Image (cartoon, rainbow, N blue to C red):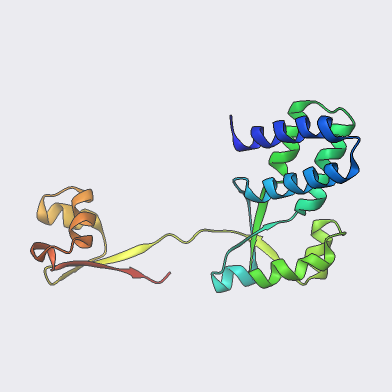
Length: 182
């Protein structure tokens, strides 16, 4: 059973147990909201320009967790199918990358549709393109840009390169690497 399915089961079962007790239903709704926060995040592929430039990554649930929890309870109240409830939970676990400051700035626009909220908060989203890490290897005084050259020169496999470069053994002190800025 996935975490999404566990939250679905929790939401449905507890709604039916406490639907006539407003105080408990509010408490259950809060727990559903917390569950959404703790769900595995599904990234949308979008990032704010500020986050992209600064490198700071905050998971921003663009569907507010409290509103999402209320929506889930509403769908259960309307007797929607369990598959529909599960889909809703999964959809509300989606996130964009923003900075922490942007995430906080969005709070006052929580009653707007997310695209409008982003616009009002001055946040521009762009496609997220993860940076690929590139390394320069310094092996026994010689610089290499490609592991394949090291494999050829030393007749070893690629895994041995990483092992030797990370090793603290005196035997491999002349095997180093450093990340190249993209």
